[in-house]
Image 1: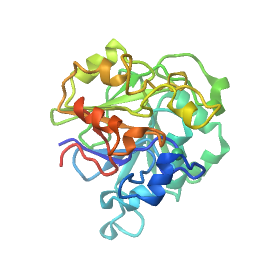
Image 2: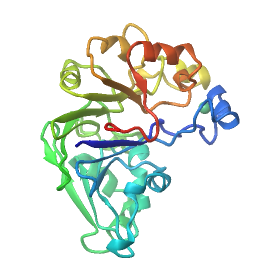
Image 3: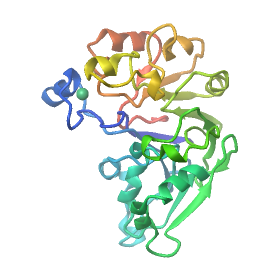
Image 4: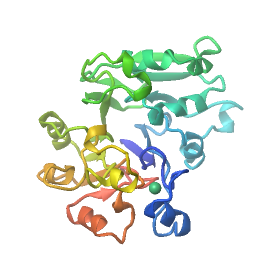
Length: 303
Ligand SMILES: [Zn+2]
């Protein structure tokens, strides 16, 4: 069985965000029963429940592990152990990679990443903390389009190349090679397929083909519309200019994927400015009416 779990569903900063008092962050602080607090995006996958693989490593990872017993150590295996066998990185973004630093404590780990993402992270001296003892880290190079097995978990993972660039802090290392900086993931086990693309810079035909073959698609729900961020915080960029197709409009994800009828169409990576976070909003109702769900922390594929 494909055990896929969302441990966090918010975009960078989570909700509420530490320095934000926009309508939704304030509502989340005052009335969390209406606008639920969310951790930053994080997912975990297993095919057999014995070993888990993290999809990226969020800055909230410590809390996410403590909120999910399956990811915690078990005394029967000794005083230091973990069911987390490895981490698949889809980019070098801090929101996706910072949690690696929380996993140091001399724990052997496997990291699956493209050559470029590995180079970017290894060039930052912080990450030497993950290599203090021999064999602490095992890097496995992943290649866009080439399927690989996640250890002996029973899950097959295929990296889907996306158009995104390296994050701002490492932009000078950009190579322009497609899929080296930003990936989606196609996960398969026991005949089930799930597409995980929390960052969608463009809805391409090849992405549509991948989605059409799946049982579930989890896609970029960062923004409701293109100008939402700049309307809330002046001087900030448009959604599309930072690599996120918004949900709404004729050229939004809901419209562009309306003909792909899967039992589970889930939005993830939801920014704290997105009105769908308020279940009383028109936007939230429009999402449900279009056959989509808003992913929530703790969501599982097979429940
Ligand atoms: Zn906010």
